[in-house]
Image (cartoon, rainbow, N blue to C red; front, top):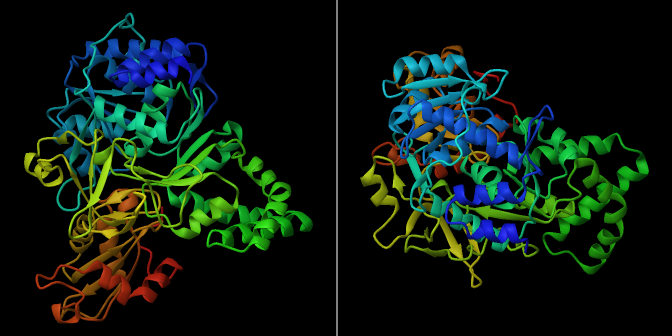
Length: 566
């Protein structure tokens, strides 16, 4: 093992690991912007120290909270590292979050300074959040408002392992989102365990493309590189990922399932325009490879192994995935078809399962040993078991310290014995592998890995018009949300344009991923007798999903009304 990597792995905090890595890899690339601008590890640390000095001048002290409302760009990494050197907790916010939610999160997190590249949001939050003392708006000159004056801070506060490193908000199954407090020790333990399971080399090339408010992206492309000395290219968003990959040729890529669904569609379209001989060979190799995920016979395997080098290796090269040593999928339900496609393409693919409260990862596929439908086993040092009702319980050093300001909620998720009650239902195999079978808590996780509370979305849509009686939002594992809506008895005749306007009004109070794109009006009565709602009239989502399966499929096929197009 690289000596610097070993030393960084043993560092007690992320801040210590950052210093070790910045010394060891000083002249090597650390961060790359979309326009090609590059920071070495030395420049990264120097800018972080200058930024830390600027934050200190604004009055930030150890234990304070800094808000980051930024697109995926190198300045996020620098500002976050700067706060870390001061012992300041960072809290990243989704740029797409609605105004009211941002105001709540700023107040709830006890944020005192906000750094953003959105001047309109900065003005609104500065006006409505009394605890926010300063807002810093970044322009074309990047972090110049913080780093442009004054000497760099040579040595900031030295955080302790159990200090809170970052605050990451959940969507919440009911009520407002909750802020998950993650310590240096928890993030370090998860990173060490992950690298023991998935041995990435020092200096690995990575791509960062999800919002940094997403716990998986924060750990994968921000904290882990501080140990690996990785070369991270910042991609402004998932829609540009496949244009960036060929230039980066990453050694490891984490993705949400929807990314691979889009890749498959794009790949088939491009193969349709390829020369006939190559097209025929590549499509045949993919077909054989996907059947092998279900077992296949020796003849099919032999045919696949004959075709893959000639027809699929060039495809991986064109996509920029020919140097990938590991590919992981997670943060949303993963279908067997998605994993079959990745293996057919010849990628070393596996799955990750975790949650914000567990630093994003608890079970990770052992390289080369993926089994369809199964994840795991647990990372080294992590224990997983199931409760009598099937709920998955996890205990390990990567668990949350608690929810900020919510001791009662903390006690519900983290019991006295240290077990985290995940809300997911599952089963364990003899070798410790985990299969997720459902979700005890009501939470939508879409195809991009965005966690959303359906009750919150339904309340916003239902408030759009008194004619609306009940709303059931669908979107788990899907690219966007749709809704089934019932109307009040005795009301006026259904007016689809009126309901469309009501849905659009409700959408204005929701973030872009939460918004309802299509809906259908349902004539059936949702009563406890029908089994579609509980005695207290709460929707039974799984029952409704089964009952209206064909209608829901029609909505995703393009039927229904579209109240909002992004």
